[in-house]
Length: 114
Image 1 (cartoon, rainbow, N blue to C red):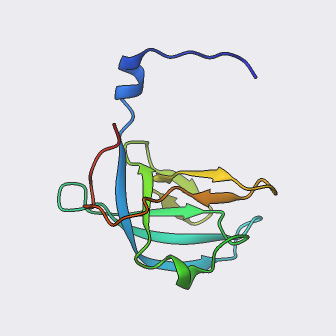
Image 2: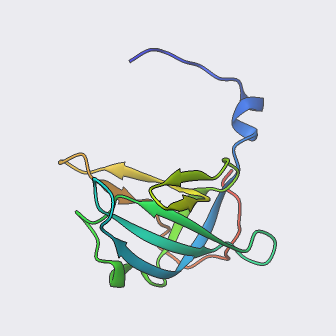
Image 3: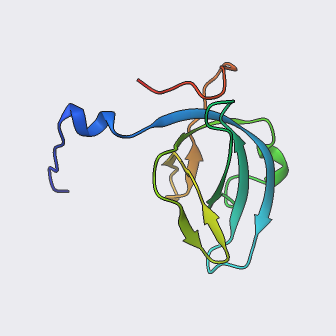
């Protein structure tokens, strides 16, 4: 892996926030099935949509009320027929499938990672 270093000012441009999943449904129309998420990031950011390839480790119904960490200031990305407005963050399991990053205790929607 290349050593692509960035400076701290570059990192500060990335807006990483906490939100709560308020709606979740399977989206099987893509080459790799996904789950469509509606995530509440609080009053300042609002509700945003995301598509994430999570079906190997999660059922859509399990994700309701789960708090997740996401990048909220990327340009929206078209994935199939939908636009993903935020990028939820996760780490790969032993099968290289995502496990969502989530706090152990409930925190306020919209708080910023630092």
